[in-house]
Amino acid sequence: MKHIFSALLLSALLGIAAVPAAYAQMSSLNAFSPYTMYGLGDMAVGGSAFNRSMGGVGVAARSPYNFNYRNPAAMSVIPRQSAIFNFAGEGKNIYAKSDKASTSYNTFNIHDLGLAVPLGKGVGLGFSLTPVSSVGYTSRIIEQNESITENIGSTIYNYAGDGGITQVAMSLGVNITPRFSLGASMNYWFGDIERQYNAMVTPYLGSTEYRSIISTENQNLSKILFTLGAQYTFRVGKNNALTLGVTYQPKVTASVRQSRLTFSYSNSTADTIYAGNSRWNLDIPGKISAGFYYQSSKLGIAFDYSRQNWKGAFEIPKDQDIRLGAQQDFRLGFSYTPNQFDIRNSLKRWTYKAGLRYSDSYLIKNGDQLHDAAVSLGVDFGLKRGTFSKVGIGVEYGERGSRAAGQVRERYFNLFVALSLFGSDYWFVRPKYN
Image (cartoon, rainbow, N blue to C red; front, side, top):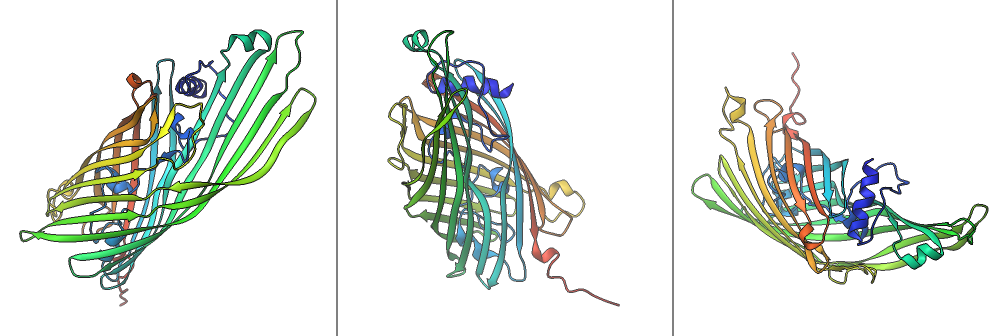
């Protein structure tokens, strides 16, 4: 039933009336949004699941007990004779609505996977697996041109897409001075995006038989990128610190390998129209991010800003009212730990988190840029007293798109569950024998 309603929603986005049906040859979707029909799809918020409860901040985050995916310079703070292992999953419920239809969908994916180890004093190395983008949509559109329906018959267009891009990163951070660190990461983007198109004609009785068309397109991307980062920490008072952070990802051009198979068919025969491979260039624009992080024994306050201009990065079909622009992200996060050393009340050792984020998407629909806003809450708690290994649980509620601007409005609810194992708690303890 949810696929039936999704067809109505996606058709409304294209500005064509839809019928209550859906076309799906894929058992599940990594994402569910009509906005993923273009380019690489939905770009991931990024960062660890622990920081998603704080709006996804992290450019200036610096802690010896947390893995920071957003700035490689933070690897330098990992203590010697230790290691950090992160694993997190994300569940998402999406409810979308337009003037013509509404739909909902649920997804679950791995959010992040990471391992960080020290190479020496003030030098750290990290490996991580995180999503970059995701694609997922299904729709069915019925032709509304009266001259076609009267002379030919019922014509239906089906669209479906699935896939995404994943990043494997190796990050190195080095302390230049006790307060200043530099870092660099090598990021390997890889993945496949499959898009399907089907045009079916059902002629009226006694009319000419028309052949239907099916086209399957697979796009494969494989590219190495680099991210440079820096952090500088100021002491504020005796035990407080203010860290400034910045990262820069230079622009690169990726060659996308594309295979396409198109054939026509009738009740008795099928003929191949096109089968072949090609390549086209995708410009992955440069991205700059900056932020600050204030930390005391109880309170943490962080803010991040990032900008990435996608204008001209890839082609949009001329018949679609979609343009590309600059994506901007604003993130604000808070954390509070009543007393991390309390031995009686475990709730006082927990860290309570909250965050806000707002972004201008790189997609511009009907002349209005697509906006995304979300609020988040979460809590981190230790696996046992006296260790730095922890579990994090967070929720996020957000909204994207505006019906007033002729867009599909999406409301979503995310749930994050994360596990972080701090190595010195278990791995570097010398065994004792009687």
